[in-house]
Length: 355
Ligand SMILES: *Cc1c(COP(=O)(O)O)cnc(C)c1O
Image (cartoon, rainbow, N blue to C red):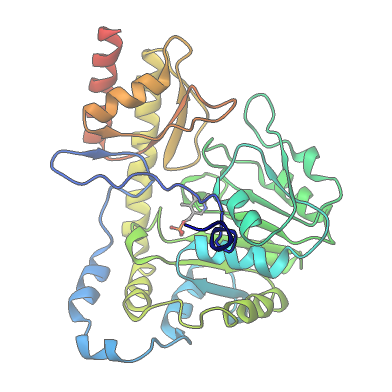
């Protein structure tokens, strides 16, 4: 291609999502999806969707869906924003709230999409190194900045930063928007800080139906914040694409949010498997960060974990490895079913024997 033409093209370095391998007998523990199916209400609603309804643009008011969210969280209808997966919600938040010459702050080891979005929107940023034990360095966020984004629990460490520490960061940064990405919060003991949006006008809390609600495939996420921030976010969205919640998603999400008993059951099972898997790995010499998520971040100082990652792939067990400083000997493993945990342990034992 000619160089003048080349110069006009984007050279952005994209986020690399985990593989979506297909085929028989694959154990997929690499993208933090939920191993359990969506609740019965979702399956029933799916069957009842009329093809004819799809000829129209989606209803962007989403009244029923908003009602379900209001029942599950202490928020009013003008205090939240809906989007096509929380990735979209977060990206629009970056555009809406990070408009300063000062750098936006996030942890050095965190969700790798944050640095991609800052590049995408030309936002200056600075990373705050985690502490030695991979916990958030809260002090590091008490410096001049153009905004803050922190996942809680953090990814890929799975470590939950206590509410009082997060609240302190929000309180000490009244002139910046602080985004707390709660993609995994349903798997934690302390839970969400959603109610703090009534106390702090600079707080945005983002959640998703992709992990704890078993609905990654329909793409649904949302943000809680005070009505003023929400209306700015709506403005940004409507400057780009007004119809982000498609008709099928709107109907299924409304159902997916209703069945609390099933939701609690699935989350409970995942936590139990998490405890068991962590203990089994410990017997094999692995050190695992304390997890409040549906995945664990683990290392074994005696072995090359990248080799283990490659070996597991040949055994059709997919986990995640990040070839990055400080974490290159760690694996991030999604918590699947008990059966999947058993297969994983069996295969790791096979690797250790061959070694
Ligand atoms: C999975 C994940 C998201 C994005 O989830 P969506 O599927 O886009 O809703 C956002 N933040 C973190 C930290 C995640 O791990």
